Structures are given as C-alpha cells and as structure tokens.
Image (cartoon, rainbow, N blue to C red; front, top):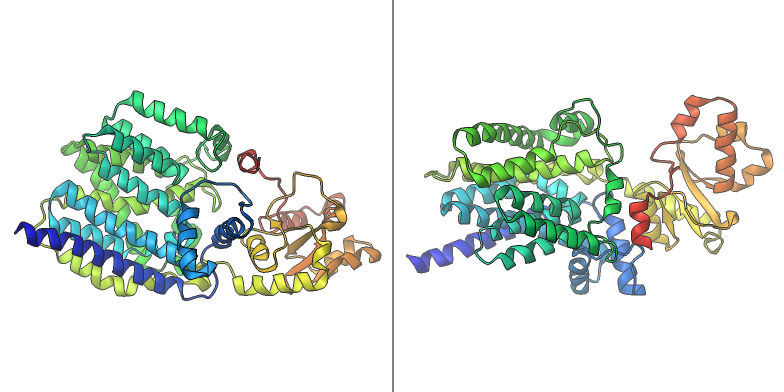
Length: 472
C-alpha cells in the first residue's frame, strides 16, 4: 500500500502540473504578442540584462533569473514570458494539491484543491498579467508548507526566499507566521534585516515602499469584490470567473463563522491574511494596491476549503471542477484583457518613421505602449516625465486623444511642424510643444479639455521615490 501511495501522490501532482500548464499556455498563445500590461516590461528587463549585462531597472527578484533560464532554451523572449507564466500557474496548482494533502492527509481533499487550481479562470488571468506577483503567491504557499517544520532554519530560509519573490506576499508571510505563533522576535529580526538589505539590494522591500500607500486609505467603505466586478464589468469577467469570485467570497465568510465555532490556529492565520487583502477602507483604483490585494485574495481563498473538506469521503466536486476546466481556461481573452498591442505595433512603427530615431533620446508614452516601443524600436521610452535633464529637441511624446483641430487652435502654425499624426487617436509631438499646448489650454480656462488630456494615457507625473531608489 505504501508503494502504491508513494507512486499515486507524485503521479497525481505531476498530472495537475501538466494539465494546468497546458491549459494556461493554450490560453496565452491566443495572441502572438506578450500577455498582460507589464509583459514587455519583464521582457525588456531580461533582454537588457542578457544582451547588455544590466537591467534598465535593477531588481534582484527571482522572476528574472527564472525567465532567463527559460529564454536560454527557447531563444524567444515573448515565448519565454508565456512559458514561465504557465509554469508558475502549474506550480501553484500542484502546490495546492500538496499542501492540502499535508494538512489533511486526505487524498480526496487534495484532489479538490488541485482541481480548484486547474479550474481557476482567475489564476489564468493573474498568471498572464502578474507573473512576479504569482511567483510571490507560490512562495507564500511553500512557506505555509514549511511552517510546520521543526527545523526553524527551514522557515527562515523560506521567508528569505519570499522576500526575493515579491514584496506583498513576503509581508503576508511575516503576518501569517506572527498570527500562527512563530517567535515574534525572530520574525521582527528577519523583517528588519531584509528591509535594511533593501537599501542596498534593488527590488526587495524597503522603507521607500511606504510611499506606495500614500493616499490609498479613505474613510469611505467599499467592498472590494463588488468594486472589482463593477470596474471590470461582466463582459471582461465572464460567467466562469464570476462564479469563482462569488464562491470565494462565500467560502471566506463561511470560514469566519466556522473559525468562531471551531477555532484553528492555521485557519485563523489565513483568515487574518485574507481580511487584510480585502480591507474595506482601501481606495479603489484600477492602478492602486487595492486591486492587486483583491486578486491575491481570490487566489488564496481555496486554502479555506482545506478546513471544510478535510474529512470528505467523496470527490464529486473534483470531477466537476476538472470537467469545467476544459471550458473555464477560455475565459481569458487577450483581445479583451490585454492592451491593444497590434495597434501599439503600428504606433511604434509610424513614430520612428516620422522622426529620425537617432534624434530621439526619450519618448514619453502611456503604460504598456512605452514598454512595447522599447521592445520593438530600441528607443528609450517610459510612462513618466523624466526627472533628469534632457535636450528638449530630443524629448518626444506620443499623445492620445488629441484632435488636429485642437492642436491648430492652441498652437502656432510654425509649431505644427513638431506634431505628427500617427493614427486617428495617437500623435507624436515634441515635449516642449506639448507643454506649451497644455499651458495655453489652461490659460484659456478650458478645464474640461485639460482634464480629458491629463489622464494615464498622457503621463504627467515624475517617477516616485520608490522607483527612483531602484535606479540609483
């Protein structure tokens, strides 16, 4: 029996890994472009290091060496990104299975947790959009797995690994250990030591990260799952994903009641972590931390099922979830969930055809478009106003949403030589003339137009200190 079990468990784990990997990769391969809003940022980081010996934004996160290993085998940066995202999703699926098996010693419970990871359309979306965050979630699950170890050095090493995975999940790991009862002095020492190291090692938690939370707390209440559904809309979420979100919320609140009736230190610790992730006083913003926290919340909610189902004798739920997995992975649609990289390809090509590439030192463009410009043209671009001195004749901008009639209204005829129409919605304009354009709109007291043109698609802020810290 032991031999059989020793073969069944790793065999099942590998099946979950392989199936999850295939489903996610099929989903990601729906587009020839990189997936996600940050896809080309990761690709540019890796390409810069492998071809020039340094990253544009120094970062010691484990996501980059992992992607470099995959790149060595594929020779294709975009494919490497897709493969690593699929590998991380598969690893999380397998980790759910193994953690449930360890905590319950019930194979059927473990099957259900593995099936949850296989089914999850939320995991597919998260892997495509946030592979670095997903790496952090995987390492957090591994920390939970190691937290029962009698050898405290194993827990400490896993905690250190979490800090070079992702900041948010590293903090969640510390929080879990404190609530679980791990020595608070050791936790404080670990946290303080790593934060001190953050002043010298780029990309890990440091005091500058406090700035990320400036203005994210409000006195108004909001329910994050509702805010997310309202913000994304049913067209982007789809039925399978909506079912998963609603189910996760029901399980969370049911687990709170369960924990009151049957106290359990593990369950309480996980619930505390999840409660922090959907803290109701976070300001909801599509670019703020509230949405990232919520996305992690949904990923971790299946862990609560371990405590409800640890004595289950039937695995019908696993069968249902596995069957639904053949349909749920299609919820992720790059045409809906990813930036319009096909358009960005045209914009980048047209931009360099309007002005000689060697006469441009930097292009200011919105998020995702800036990263794609760097990838496709080799010209430096970013979604911030440069905080350093730069020759005004070599600083350009790709502006969005401006009509020719508006340029003609607020710029002089001679200025129009520095404005180039690229598409009906995008144009290339030298930055000093863009500044002049906005100033004249302001002086004309045309607040409505000014507000329309100073959004995320037309960056107007300098990089914050927590980003500049990594550049130093």
